Image 1 (cartoon, helix red, strand yellow):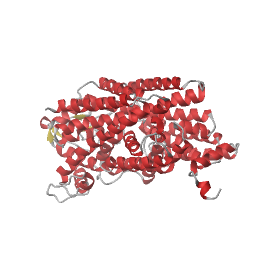
Image 2 (cartoon, rainbow, N blue to C red):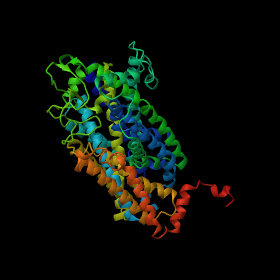
Image 3 (cartoon, rainbow, N blue to C red):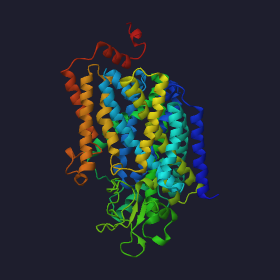
Image 4 (cartoon, rainbow, N blue to C red):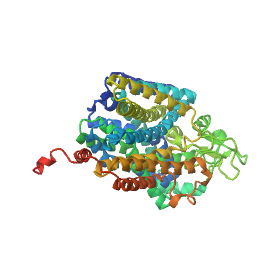
Length: 591
């Protein structure tokens, strides 16, 4: 059976599974739509959380970043993984004990303010749409390459699939669909990794293979071999970094606290029966997440070795099919600058306006390349870092069924997160803006209808951004983490751990952190991208890490304002105590 037929079978089979699960678990009430009825088992919820967490960025992009950036990309591993630990230990159990449906619900109730709730909804919607545009674009790219359809049609198909199990199933349908998607994506990620590790080191376990010797007779370990190969070509060593210590610290911390404030992950802890189950499901999710995150460094290293070996100093007429296939979608390219027909892979951009290795794009906002060669660079080869994981099986000439599995896994990763984000958007509109703020008199049936209509509208907007990405889509990925770190995280943290924090302080903190971070990132990413360098950054902190300063501003202003305004009502102080103090603690102390 040929590769294309297998891809159709694998992708079609998984889509049928997702739709079947969604129809079986269709939500019949607002509680089932928002929090899956609140009765999901911790292990099941942990698996669904892992799928929600590991988006196309984790599945497709992270190993590609590691492949091309080496040590510098470690901030993503540390930040995203550390952020989940922070969320699991510091926030999740308390939020679950609070017992509300959404993050704005918590903020609005804790700070006894409709204004605070609306500010939280604005932050949440902006963060969610930033993410979901990238997910839908990823769906379109995977479809276009593996199913040989236009990117626009690929996005539309993805919209249809998400519509069925997000709009009809709600959180209940999404939860059980994400369990299936986790199984697909982790199997798709690990199987090629086993193959690659065995081929390169003779060790089938990639985590061990990364620290093993390359079986090419050189006696070098994998990282030593990579350092030697890249420095010979003129690149910096794979294991050396180019970022300053303060920037590494701030990016890592911004990713951590931003991750801990991401609403589509937080909402998963409302779906379990009790607070102790939230802690258990967080632990299980960490186990499931660790499978991919501990494998990604090995996948990135193996991918880079294979890529350089397969492409550099190769006659273009003899290059493997994977390169020319991806070239048809503008994601790889060769520009024969010296006319010898040999592909020279060197530092620098092969084309003017092409994305560089840190992920920035040209003015079009597309990944596709400009046709003008860059005369200042000797590099003749372009490859988009986001294709490395998807192309790995083809580069390594793995069996066709592995390539088909990779296609299904990439779609599962993108669709699982897209569905979670859509639900967050719809619940914020129907529950936080309508039911809790502007139309408190609507019935549960009307609220459920509003949630489904909001999810439908969100799918249409997300699909539009996937089909027609504005020039800044690829550049505003930093917005999501920076804005979450600077706006939602401090409000949630102080809402749990500070009885004295009042509504005026929380609102002033969220707005100030949001505005500062937005202006800083917008200036360097949109207004003056030419000035985006360490020489011009505040304290040497890049836009990707500036959320930390926004967070500090949020905390400082919130605390200052709360000191000069009225204290929270007594019932709010008691509410904070009830969130933090375990049940039965008073009896144990004789109270």
